[in-house]
Length: 174
Ligand SMILES: [Cu+2]
Image 1 (cartoon, helix red, strand yellow):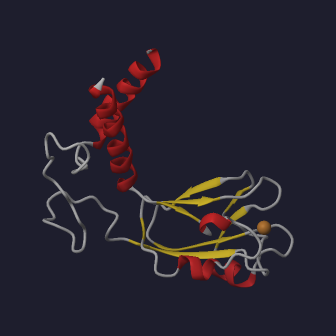
Image 2 (cartoon, rainbow, N blue to C red):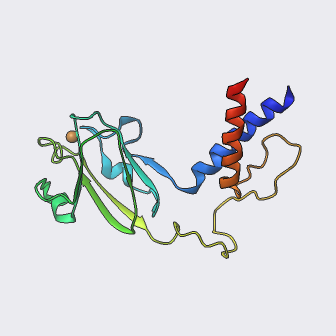
């Protein structure tokens, strides 16, 4: 059946479109949240936006994530964290612009390098539909009809997701 592969292609496209809306940043990339990571280097040059997510990959008990102030970050003070996440892997949503600080509260891990500072920009995260085109953002908007996967339809991610869910259900019933 040709329709079936087409549907799978649609699913792939939908997944890509959904992922493009808000970024998930895996802290330390493949290394994860661990001793020996260099999180200043990791964060450098990344454009964090409000609504993005930080994913801290660690095994529960080995590390944790403390949300702290700048001075606590600078001094590796684990005693006055604003929030403590002990279950790994952990995800943290960047809900406001500005500087955000995270340290590990286990042992001397923070002074060993398990500390992360991110600067969240205020501009790029806000959805403003009237803006003509953000500079440097490639947006293929014309959905080419018959071509299989040329133009991902980035617009209707919500409805498309619903469709994809239905498709998955149908596929599961085969
Ligand atoms: Cu740790």
